[in-house]
Length: 75
Image (cartoon, rainbow, N blue to C red; front, side, top):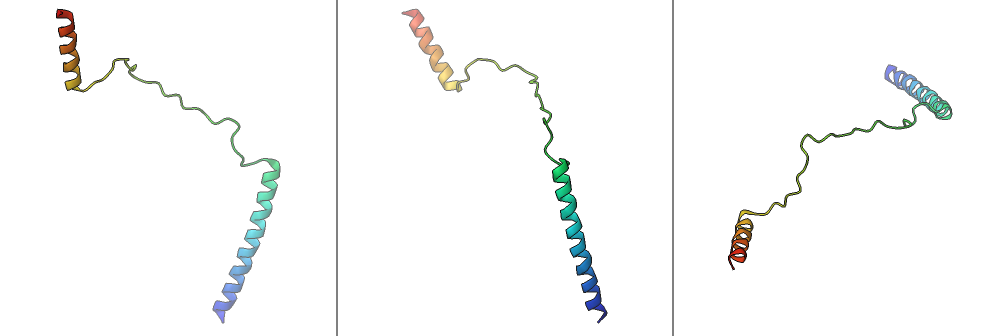
């Protein structure tokens, strides 16, 4: 019997807390508390090394290009 009284008291407290929380939430929404910040801070990332504009080719392609350039310059 004591357990039933505790459950009824707890449910009454939980119900009251929900009502109070909903009311406070409505008031806060009307006032404008807890909304999104006006402008979020921007994180500016500064690169440590500048990217180079060199083309990166696999080793076999580089060697083939060098051979072709050497052959073209000899002819």
